[in-house]
Image (cartoon, rainbow, N blue to C red; front, top):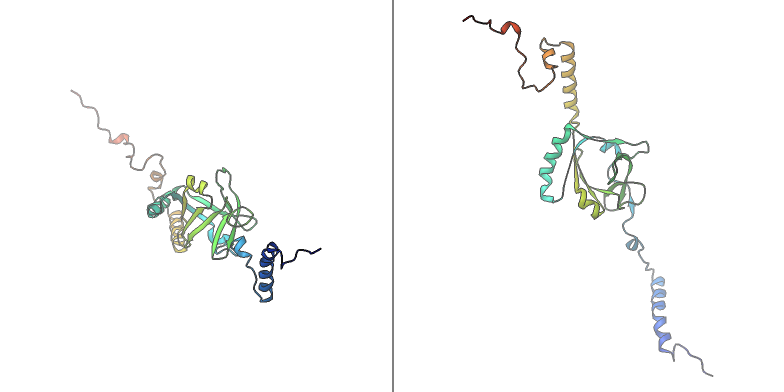
Length: 211
C-alpha cells in the first residue's frame, strides 16, 4: 500500500510552504517586531508633578479655532482658580470625568514623547487625558475617550500664580501697607460696591428754613 507524501499530496505541499518560510527566516536572522502588534512602548513622561502644581484659570473648547479665545476666558477665571496639587504618591490631584471629588492621578508616558494624566494603568486609557502642550504657563489637556471629549472638550489651564518677580513685588506692597496704614483705611474696609458714595455726615445737612 502506498502512503501519501508531499510529492503525491498537493495539500501537504501547501501546508509546508509557511513552515518553510518561517524556517528560512529564522536561519537568516530575521525576527518579527512584536511591538508593532502591541502599540507604542511605555516611556518616562515628558513632565513631572512639580511642574504642573499650581492654581489655574480653566476653560474648554471644542473647535481648534477657538483656542485663543478660550485662553483669554481661562485667564479671566483666575478669580476662582482650579488648583492642581501634588499627591502623596508623587502624582497630581485632579478630577476625573463625571467625578465630584478629586483624586491622585499619575503622569504616564509613551514612546514618541506623549504624556498622559490618568489613574493607575497603561498610558492612553479611556480615563486618561493627553498633554497636548505645556509651556510652564498654559496647560492644554485632551481626553483620550472621544465620548468624554465630546462632552468636556479640550481643557485649557492658564496659570494664575504669576512670575516669582511679581510675587515679590506683591509681598513688598502688602508689607508696606501693613506697617504704615493710611487714615483712609477704614473707608477701604467698608462693605458694598466701591463705586457707592459714602453716607452723608449730619453736619453737612443744611438747616431747615422757616417760611
